[in-house]
Length: 305
Image (cartoon, rainbow, N blue to C red; front, side, top):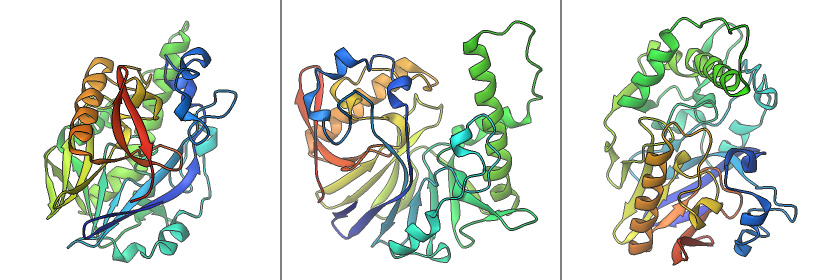
């Protein structure tokens, strides 16, 4: 999909579909989803499976060519996530089809440092992980970066003899994040291409970060504005449009559920008041739309602009 925001052009660069979102959003049951009829046909199947994408967003038209998030990546060791383990995807081809080569990108902006948002930061050259975008500055929100750097530095404890499913899942997630930091973040830092920035950092004229914590400690979204036209690229402060209808619905992978819900309420209210465009980082097509108050939340009125 493609959007025009004043002088800016935003293009979705898709890597792969995402499955199982209904398992991540605790309140997203068939009976509750059935009460949101506008989710069909774009965002939900007839048997209440939630649709989504893992994707990046290319922003052109300003003083910098900006790439927001970099998906899962190729050749990455992800044994705890079979669908993402050593995958081979045509992401760079999709980027080229959108009009950009890796060397054209000036800024890589990561909304947070989870495994499915930093993978194409690097590529395997046969001997080492190298920066995929060699001219770019890679921007990591400072709190976010320090949080995951501290985790990466911790020694991994062996599993206890008796371990609950919840604790096992948390341990697997931490293992994946250590691998992610090692192959997709640390090489960027070692190459001198990383900048730790504030949560309201101005990337360039018309593009800035917006603090949206809760999913992770330093999570940010991206505001693109030119005159009265504006769009917010969400990152993972919202995972699926059903959370627009119910901003309090929890995503199990959020670090702080209450803070994440407050973030959604605030962001959605602000966008609805200003008629701003919300671009959902994991939304299925069409992934951009306006928000109209409805019930306890909002209705997502999708479309291209």
